[in-house]
Length: 170
Figure (spheres, rainbow, N blue to C red):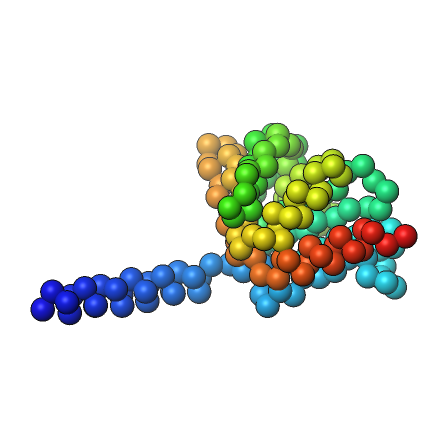
């Protein structure tokens, strides 16, 4: 009888884990990252990647020959007035966290966004972590509320390789 209970408990925990994984937001399901800066694109001189799951969006933008690149993160559930000071921690699964003190910003449509501007010297490390990561974790606090934003990542190795190739083009 104890073996039956153990088997039932194992089956139940596996079913719950599968259900939880099915509910997790996935950016770029199937690895379908939008490439910004493809030949003939409307954004010459810029290389970038973008993905979203509906409410959540992640974009990495690097203008060629610029000293900085931008990691832009949005979620329609956020209500962050532009200019709000935030202490943001971003971490690709299994890697060291990146921390920045920034001000929340609004995009052209007035939606709240977190924009991390990082020096180009950090790009290789960030792309290596991004390319190996299965999840992205973002944490920040606003008006006494701790925000924890986690998304599953798919296809990041190919996306990071494409971005590096785009940046290497003359």
